[in-house]
Image (cartoon, rainbow, N blue to C red; front, side, top):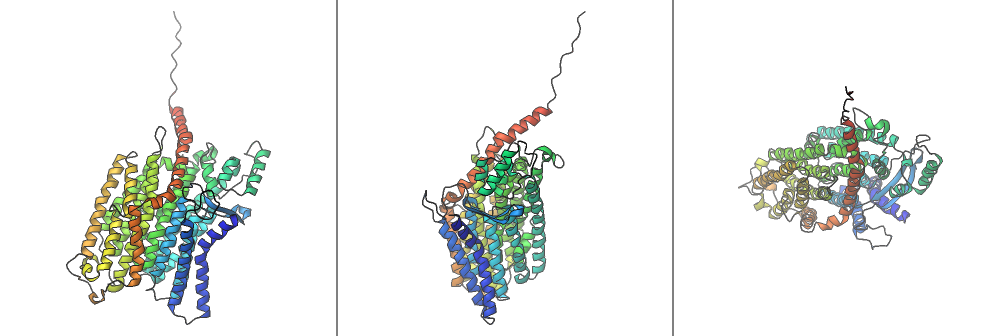
Length: 598
């Protein structure tokens, strides 16, 4: 079956790149072809990718070895590992579990809708389609890669297409926004690369037993060589370490009592903190730039405001989720030491982003910038849910599981609602060519169907019960109570701020007395294409709100497994270590003086 897995996952990742090649060849063979030909080719390939992921989502028969996703299975599925650069232990290693698969579905779904939303693009259409498809390949590769080096390659593949898509097809300040996006993301990438190298050169597969190596899906030939080396040497300090980029193996090593990342010389790597602690900080900064959170969020409003509508949909719906995915998949499993130590810092940054983003959104006059700052606020819930490390000795991990599941659900729900909001802003912008909230008003009377859709999507972003935004926010807020009641109260209060700016926006844009801006004659009802793009977003916003188990049944087993492994590490490794350190700091009891009797 491994060949089937290779074919399926490789097709999902590289089919858009094949589409980019087809678009390029179509331009060579038919240089005078209409631009719609390139758009149609690109749309067909994005539909094909979504069809493949949708086929995978159809639950496989229990007990039958199938390439389709097995719902309820927590472990990695459809894994394969092929030699890529074996001299440096780099493998073409991919797989999927409930955490990554739901995001793959979201990516293929939004890529299809965003490509369809690209029909108004008229400048350099062939180049636009090629870059769009390459961007989709990079996004899908990030969610499926299990080799750290391969993950980094896909992460970087996204950078240049997004830079050009903003810088060439964006608004008046597109060059500034594109360069700012590029520099921020590149800075995060440098931090990530340093952390990857730190972990790679201090890893050693010989520390793992055969069961752990198999659980990490290390290739059988390498397992045999590692075990042979291990059996030949009683002292593993001698010989050549078996370095690895395997993310699953790195996670197994980090949970060892003698983890190579925080023992020996690495226990006090720099300024009293372990190598693993610093690797977490570097990775965390690299990922939260993408989320983004305060104070590394300033690239996002500019990028959103200047990006064309389809790219804003992808940016909000998928790219921001890659930061949250990296924290869940990499930061916490591979660097649990710092995750435990910095739990309050992570949760505090999440709450700060929630509050700051809500207040900033309330102060905006630009419709698109308001939606951009709402994304900063909503993604703060994701960071808060991830950071709630309530799995301590004497307590169960249920609340942390609730927070992690809520964070994952919030990413998916925000992907639907934010993509919808940016699309709806783009629909009206294409007609009136401005986004000044003070000049809108009365759109409900002029565009009733469009306005009705906008109400559903914006209420989903608000977190109205029955729509997708409610479930994740409630789960995260409830999970925080046992961790920090102060943070729980603040996070719950953000709902009031969110309702404030969402309702005020709806009142100013759709329910105002009259339209006061330019090009009033261009305000016409939504076209069938626009309605067809918005309809699936509305449908999923409602479906996930009334039947959240449609998502939880896929992702919860894998999320819960991650939390259980970290909770076990907390009980068996971290807290005993804390107790030993406390005992070492306590002063020895004074001995009574031996005074001779007269």
